[in-house]
Length: 92
Image 1 (cartoon, one colour):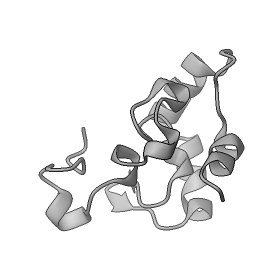
Image 2 (image 1 turned 90 degrees about the vertical axis):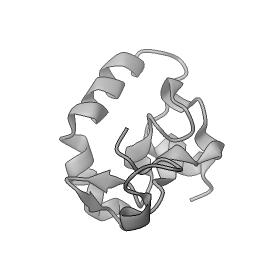
Image 3 (image 1 turned 45 degrees about the horizontal axis):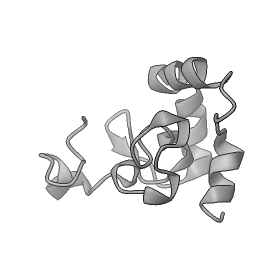
């Protein structure tokens, strides 16, 4: 946990992370809310900085160890959702 979950220690300073509350993508890539799809959400934390633009953050996300882990674990499953699938689910 990064402390940006509801009630977390960093919420006052950085706000609640949308990955912890985005219910439209709950269970995507076997995650809770947006927890295993954070790269598809703006407002997530990367390198200690809240990311505001999806385009600005994607380069960092694709280099992220967590992203790589999820991709390796999920990509062969028929339920795997990539960023385009997730954006479609979110109506973007």
